[in-house]
Amino acid sequence: MINFAHRGFKGKYPENTMLAFKKALEAGASGIEFDVHLSKDGQLVIIHDETLERTTDGSGLVGEKTLDQLKDLNASKNYPDCEIQRILTLREYFDFAKDYDIITNIELKTSIIDYPGIEEKVYELIKEYGLEEKIIISSFNHNSLIRFKELDDNIKCGVLESSRLYEPWNYVKNLGMEYYHPLNFTVTKEVAEKCAENNIGLNIWFGVSDYDYSQYLEMNPTGLITDYPDRVCEFIGK
Image 1 (cartoon, rainbow, N blue to C red):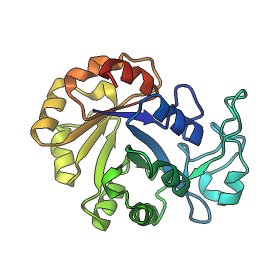
Image 2 (image 1 turned 135 degrees about the vertical axis):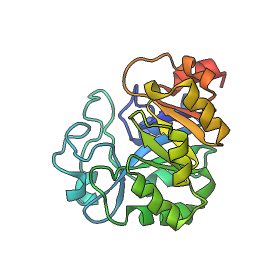
Image 3 (image 1 turned 30 degrees about the vertical axis):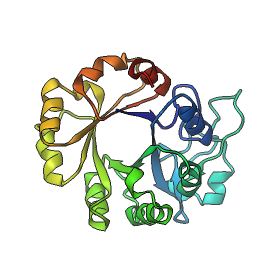
Image 4 (image 1 turned 180 degrees about the horizontal axis):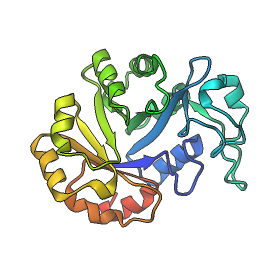
């Protein structure tokens, strides 16, 4: 089972920062999940929200700022005791991750702002680093996943959902995707069993509430995407 660190070790460190990614690996994570947007000048940047206010000392839309402007911001503003962290580019993350045996789940943040060409930019960078076998692309915008599959059908993709889809295993299968990424409380025994029967990987993600992650082991998931990779390590013995 893949122990995905949600936005890095988000439970204890500034989300989507290099510090959070490094601490996730130190805690035993075998996968890292994060979010990608496009800057005003077309650079792939790692941040969750479309806006800057929640996680940085900036304001406005990520897509209305150049990379230089984004790099001036403090991405650890909610952690005053932490050294200043900067918004990362996807290239900077790949430079870090290429030497580790980890699976990277890149969430394309195209459900609110459908950044033109983001799929091609992400794909070209994956190819440049030769990481095709270590990547899962996910998105709440399933059109974005279709566009990615049109670029390379061999890249594994996951259908992100927070709703209770009707027969999600059929939906994912009909889209031609390899994984279903549901919010934890929408997963039932039937969903888990049907995904397995249809050879669909099940990567369950969790919100900010304090969950007992171990109760989901009976679902036999492919992976858990949590804020606390250290807690997952405690019950999977890794």
